[in-house]
Length: 423
Image 1 (cartoon, rainbow, N blue to C red):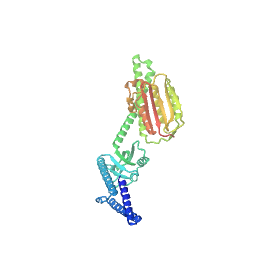
Image 2: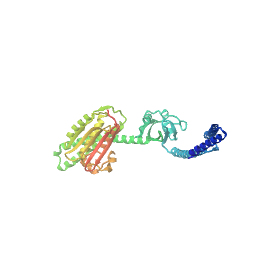
Image 3: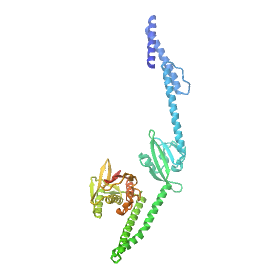
Image 4: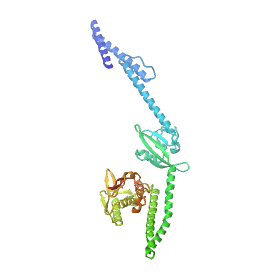
């Protein structure tokens, strides 16, 4: 609207000047003089606005017409922007003051990895100097290869756990990174050394106890086997107890074997897994072996992929055999267990599917916990140790794979290992 008024004023001035010039016989001269005056007036107004924009703290200059409206509009938006910026700055300061008092380390970096801000808790964790290192690239200050590779890769779907050299002993850190703003990132760093050492102590304890139990169990099983072989010389009332003792001794041996194997996988989780594993050959060998051991089930192979996997043949064989044995045990007589190796959505998948009793959805999140059982009454019928799926979980993690479980009560279950890459 202001533009229309300004334009109308200019037109009226030019027409007035033309009429006045016509009266005196110089209409063109009058129009030129009027237009020149208007231009100089506008230049004068522009100079005032430009001077004020270079120093907005000055008072608003006195302007006229469209320039007055324009200056008022600029002033309004400037004040509005200042208020928003002040509120944003207040929010940032509040957030930083809140993060400054937490025990975990917090670092904010921009899209180029340059440090914007960090709290004092980061100093002993990453070796940064408070305030002095602001404005520096984070990867230039933290030289740990595992951290830098994780930071630069840009895939933060999973947190990073790595060893950082401390002053006296190794320190274990956990790093989580989240994107915010336009390419900025915030890092949360936590010292998990106590948790790692406690887990290591627990793992060592289980491994040591299991190892110590192996010898006496071997002796007990040996004597029980000898006594059972000569049970015709024993009274009838001793035969059933001997059978039960033999079964429990065998179960204990299986438990110790699984505990030792699980401890070995955990202790070797950083070891190189560089074998090229022919999954088709592995599954065919497993089918032949388990087919003889469990004749009550039919094992069907569906091998549509030729892809190999880089890893450990022994570990993968153990994981898949655990899945197949579970499927057989929790299916009825003459049941069918399907073992498939295929590619889907760019991922290699190994699935074991049965038509057994199925698992209620409430139990699925805890299936891979050690000794977790859906139904304790199954112990005597299946003879399992409760460690099979825990072993599968650790083998999957060691091979950069995920374990997916789908099941419906009364219809069966499907356990699938999804590998992120091949061989």
